[in-house]
Image 1 (tube, rainbow, N blue to C red):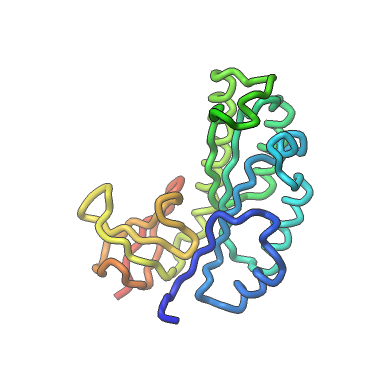
Image 2: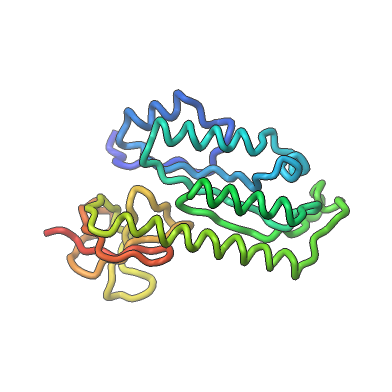
Length: 218
C-alpha cells in the first residue's frame, strides 16, 4: 500500500483486457503507461514470427487503450529485417507508426539466434538493407517523439527523482509517469533540489527529441 507508482512493462497484446484498462483508470497508482512489444505490424511477418495477432488486432488494441486511458503513454519494440520482410512490409510498418503516433518505440535489426526457428528461414535480408530500414524507422519515430514531447512544455508534472544526471552532476535526472527507467528518455532538472526517491512537481520548460528539461516548483 505504500508503493506510490506501479508501472506495467513487457505485456503481450492479448493480455491487455478491458478489466485491466478499467483498473488503470480507477487506480492512480497504476501509471498511464503500457509497454507492449508488437515486433511488427505486417500479418505475414507476424505469422512467420509465430505471433497470434495481426495488424487489425493492434489497431483495435490501441483504439481500446486510448478510449479507456486517454493519456496513456504507449511503448513498443519493432524488429526490422526479419527473414522474408519485403519493402511493402516495411512501408506498412512506417504507415502504422505514422498513424499510431506512439510515445516510445525501440527498433532492432533482426539477427539470427542459434537454435531459433527463424535462423533456418530462407529469404534472409542483407545486413546493409536491414540497417537502411532501421534508420528509416528510427528517423520517423524521432520526428514523432520530438513533436509529441512539445505538448509537455509549460505543463506541471509529477516526477520520480532518480538522482544526479549521468550527463552532468549539475543536473538532476527524473522521470515523469510517461517515462520508464533505462529504456525511455528522462527529464533533466536545471533548477531546484530533491533527493533520490522523492516524488515532486516540476514545470517542463523545454522539449528535445527524446528528453525534456524542467525545474522543480518551490
